[in-house]
Image (cartoon, rainbow, N blue to C red; front, side):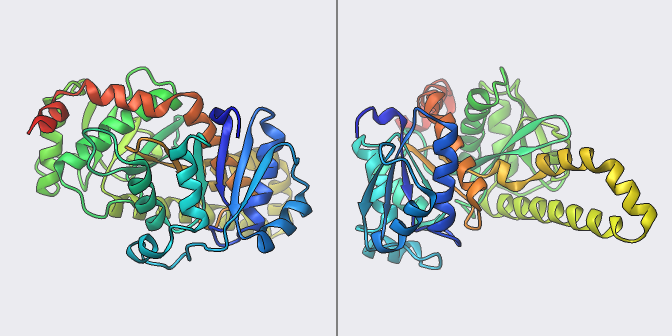
Length: 346
């Protein structure tokens, strides 16, 4: 497709509600972004009915028939062996070939990471890409990584995440000098595993020493104690799911409280405008779309259960990263960090 800088590759087969929610999300994005087109990969027999249902603009998309797809429960190793003609593989490959500027998928996270790493490759100095997203805080918003790509991390991995998270925050949230914290079980220097304490020492001795604020705890995410929260994928994924669950609990509790009596219903009606603003701010779909940072191309993970609004927001994230030249920004930031430069020479 022409003008690939504003073409987004779409894996139409990934996700709990695909291809319905995916194509509906593309329609949302199509209305919002007049300068963007889509390269859609999927099984024509399953996808075309939804393209017709949502009446995608024929001049705004190109469809590529791919009968194969990666199942949500398929192991990444098996997917790598058998999925090279799948919608996910070919959508990522479109970014590699320059036919698209970014790829968005709600599919299998492990397969997306494995395929993206194989096809797009990692940046010099990066051993493991990480999943990064933006979350709301009492102050504004913050960046959190890793959210599930790497269950176990050594000190170097955590330092890499800190560097990439700082660059992401600078480019997307426009923070001039984003503050960084390592997620730990306490703020004291003696707390945590050896690799966390080692990463902290490296950051204190690095060009990011001014931005690094030491250890932070999980409740600091909500308060926005720092701009960038760094952790391993195991801990990060648990923290994210706990936050999402708490948001759903709050909504459920408010609904239950509002229905207990006539007086509570009246109070609920009076507070309704404010509650609607709160619901919008806490809506997980508004923050859907996590970038796999550390790759030589842009790969965006949408939540597997995302609805049309959520998937459209993942497309928004893809466009933001393209427009901010995030890959280039991260690459330039990596070049300025002496620790990684020394490691590359070994």
